[in-house]
Length: 172
Image 1: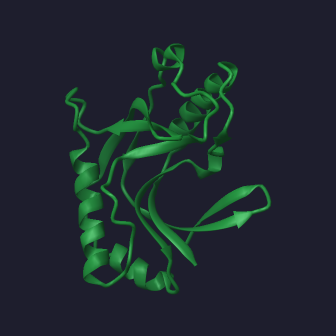
Image 2 (image 1 turned 30 degrees about the vertical axis):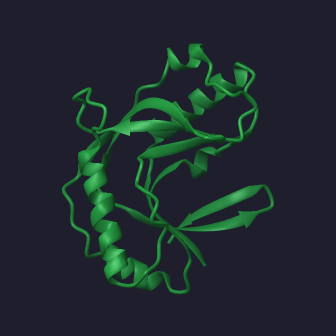
């Protein structure tokens, strides 16, 4: 079973992100756009793992105070365009302290339990489009990024399956 741990986005965030995706499409961008129902923030990608109950048990040991996150900035990792996040509104470059702390504690707990996960550095982002047809994000889009926020008060274990029309993410 292919698993990952994520923060599910609220409707305000999903609405803002789908409006942004439509704006990109109006600007002529084509590519593999993340479907609305699949928009999320990955905290730890586990991949193939046979027992989701082991992972759920680890997740239950992670305590954190609820905190807010907001959409903030847009960028790319190679052929992937993403929306960034912030949670302290300080305007500082590196400002997702609560989010990064949550991911760090979760990843340490997975490691201590011997549950493998992708150990790439955590970089808070929401994937918008893979393999965009343009090399650069249009300036008009960057000048009009959406605003939305939400309270993070729980994390979700997700299953990823390949469906007829792309990936299907299901909360376990």
